Image (cartoon, rainbow, N blue to C red; front, side, top):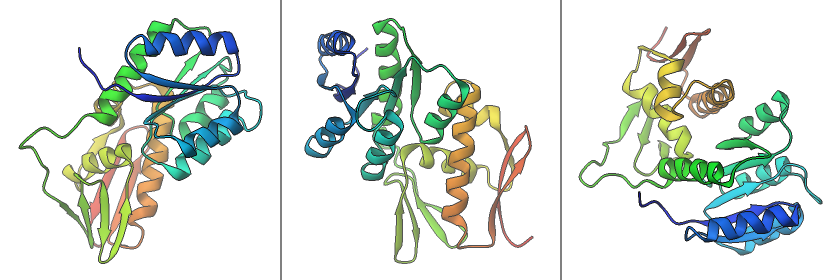
Length: 234
């Protein structure tokens, strides 16, 4: 299957592993820049034109968590995959709360990393099908432009990440109806993994903040079941 060729920032302080992964990913046509510490990686990101990131967590200089936060503050769209020996639930939760797209525990087969990169790239870089441009959606006093990933309120424009847009779209198309957590997770992540569930909670919280200017809109949480985007006075 043909897929998007990527400009990858790989941050791995194990020189042998970093070189091995760089050569492996380049053999599939990707352009890869390998950095050995977090500070140099952030400098490279600011100077380069990357569209995919792969980070270790334990790095010289700033760690992978901080690096993710800094890069996300500059580009909220770019996908990030974590590769780490740290297999603790708290580390995974923190990473997904920061908005990473996947988390792979070392040691791993390079083929598995490639499969995960392809899966994330297909979701994030897939263009809209020709002739299938979605009409803007109305949410209270907001207009949600899915094609441009924008939430508009008068002259105020907020750019959403692709994942935020996908979550909001599902809620909008089922406005005032319950949509189950499992359905959202399967449609957007392809499974009902605990950590993807935590990521969903984070995205819901962000969307609530974006919509709080209109008190006629709210997102109700039905514990362990799902969410309802409600529009109109209670």
